[in-house]
Length: 158
Image 1 (cartoon, rainbow, N blue to C red):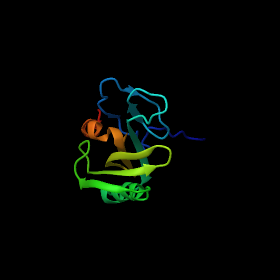
Image 2 (cartoon, rainbow, N blue to C red):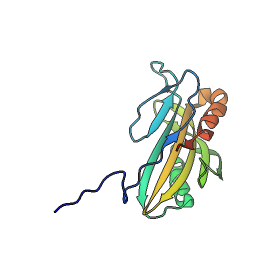
Image 3 (cartoon, helix red, strand yellow):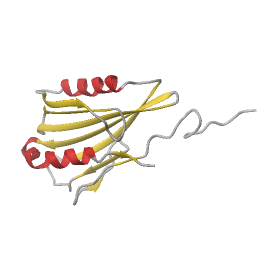
């Protein structure tokens, strides 16, 4: 007789429940490969300042150092990448890492991006939580403090 397995279940833990603070006038948006995302109101023909959160699952234990190296390497491969800063710190009460930098995207221009990365171990798997906030260079001076605040608001909900 066959047996049934389920998600979430004993061998397949649920993904963490996450939340961020949404700035006034921003709205939730659906973005592929994310669990939640928010963005400023849409303006035709312009890049939309946003913050997106994703969760990736790996088998076994993944260290924050491995997760940080992977995210940093992705940014470093970007055209004209210039790092603003990086540090290990608690993110949503978990071992974490933050990195900020700017890079060039064809047909968009220079973007500033800040990322917070955290790892959550449960049983046989590790979930890597990545929160990313992005803005154009022309809006960065005004928007970066708010984007940092959005990323700092990331929390695991009960």
